Image 1: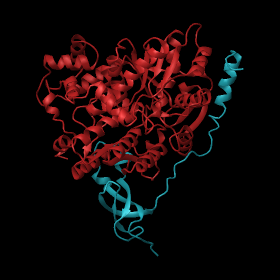
Image 2 (image 1 turned 30 degrees about the horizontal axis):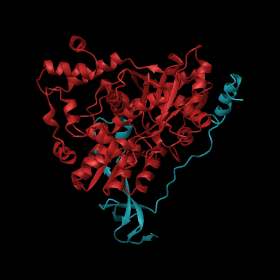
Image 3 (image 1 turned 90 degrees about the vertical axis):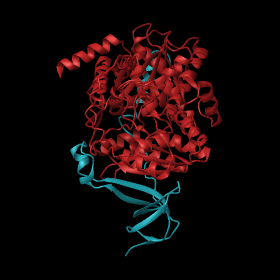
Image 4 (image 1 turned 60 degrees about the vertical axis):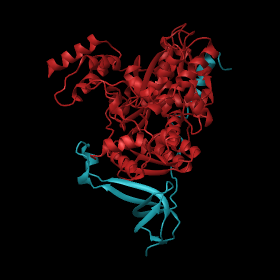
Length: 463
Length: 104
């Protein structure tokens, strides 16, 4: 696909080469600023389609349950931002709203998005309201024709909003079909990773900061975000900063899918999760510029203070708790951060606040029952027990009691090391890293120039 | 005996986008052995035979060709049977909260 740069440029209207400042460095803030949208403008645009201003709900029963298993005086209060209250049922409406607004403003007749998740429904919903055509490209079924039930539900939702849905079997060549579709239609690339998408999420962090202050008299001590491609962590953290909540720690949480290959036809229907998992989170955190735009505006490593994983069984368990203790049927994938919150709240005092920053709608296919029935059909063992024995693709272990919920730390220094290694590999031709590049890598990895130089030295010593 | 499908019917077409031997080299072995397949729904432009070549107009207004594989395709995803590993959880945690006096 030799025409890739031209198609990209025409379909998103941004000349990314203007932002290059070094061999790999680029001016990230200017890329976002040049869109011309500040947070006030984004909030106003989102309010026109009833996006945002979702409730922040205190999960009092789950908080009490946490305190039954934590040390005396521990067990922070848990709040959840009920993003399922957005028009298409997830925080993805925030990402879609600004992209579709921009597409309409610039006179595109339609939008195309490559997504198998909630984002497709969000783009289709926003396009419906704006009177634009919409095409969603999904990875939807395996070579036996078995559809992943959650994606089948997303197909239905997109079609309900009047979108064309291109359903593909497993494989990264989806990107090739996506580019051909952009080329053939001349539509706008409503990428999950454009500046518009990230600016659209900032309102989430901004709102929750103020809502927490209003309900609890303080900013959140910890905000936990389900982490996949990086947009959720990036946008939320940026919004928190814009609201002045600079001390709130942002924690990324992903479902551990270690051992399953994201491009494997065999593994496709053995994941039980379509997003919020390490299969996206690891590659995108260690190298964000693998997206459907030249420069990814989702750069999670800049913003995460901590990165944890939870198991599949723990997320299904917490989804059940949310329904039966709080009367909220949500998720399951969005509840990844809630599963992490259950463990992390036990490290904090009772007066402290943990905010789980999203929920998502649930329904046919998009539900633990549908996922676990598919898992059983695929020969995966589903059992109660210690979640530490969970093995993705082989065995899903639903905890026997709440004390078993835990998080596994991802070593951020290893992630940073891997990021810098990718950056060196991405260096064009004979170019070397300049001082600007080193500074860029320090910001990207949330470290300093010394740290970056030491890692580079270590990489060169080993090679 | 093939079924004749009237123009304007909502159908699904199927097409192989890449044959197995045309697939990306970096794919895992299992994926490289199968083609990249595509399914799209739309309205039939002209009457066609089930399992025959057909042209559709998609909701976005595009005209696409492929094999007509399904007429008015059903949404078959659902829930299935309740999961015995999940159903007792609510009672377990409510009992735990009762022992602490939070629930009566």
